[in-house]
Length: 78
Image 1 (cartoon, helix red, strand yellow):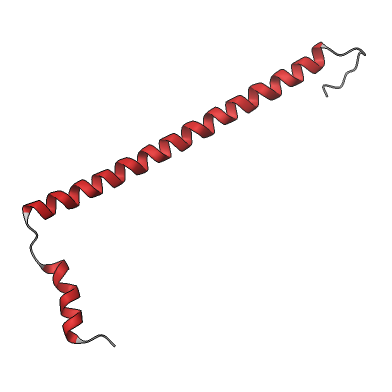
Image 2 (image 1 turned 90 degrees about the vertical axis):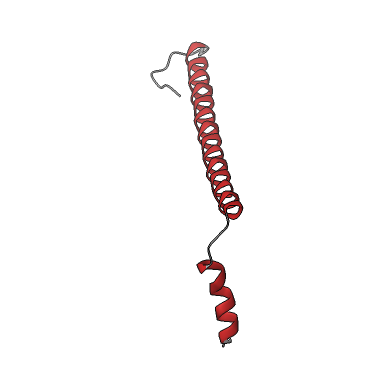
C-alpha cells in the first residue's frame, strides 16, 4: 500500500500551477507529437496508394502482354 506522503507527492504534480515555461514546453511537446503522428500516417497512406497503383499496372501489363503475344487463339484471358 502506498503511504500518504507518496500519494500527496504524486498528486502534487497534477494540482500545482505550472509556470509559463512549463506550459509552453508541454504544448510544444504535444504539437510535435501530433505533427509527427500525422506525417507518419500520411507517409504510410502515400506508400499504400503507390504500391497498389504499381501492382495494378503490373498485373494489367502482364495480362495485356499475354493477350497480345498469344500464339494460339483462345477465349480465355489467362
